[in-house]
Image (cartoon, rainbow, N blue to C red; front, side, top):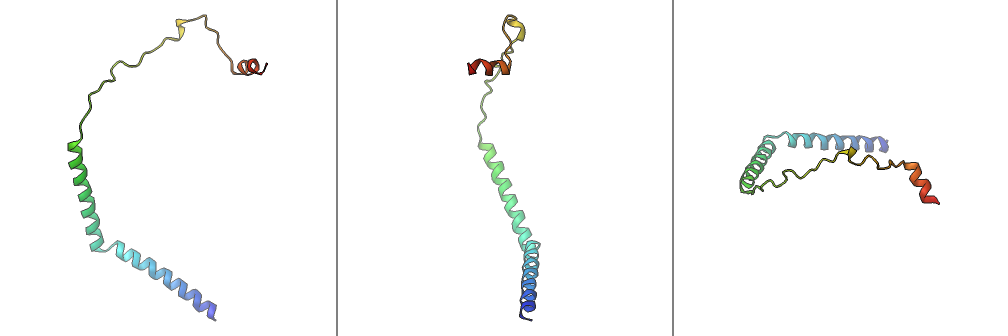
Length: 88
């Protein structure tokens, strides 16, 4: 009998916790505070983004494309041959 009362009490406490959490989460006061906070963050981000300095792009023509056929005499290496050569 005591076990059943204890289990019922646990279930009631869990449901009460869930109910009050959801009630607080969807309350008008919490929704207002959330939107105020989001608006405040948006304003701060916009304010800070105006102060950021932009850097000049100095990365023009830094990539050199190499043609594979420049040195046709170059020996092609195979993975297994490299292992066998290192073992001896």
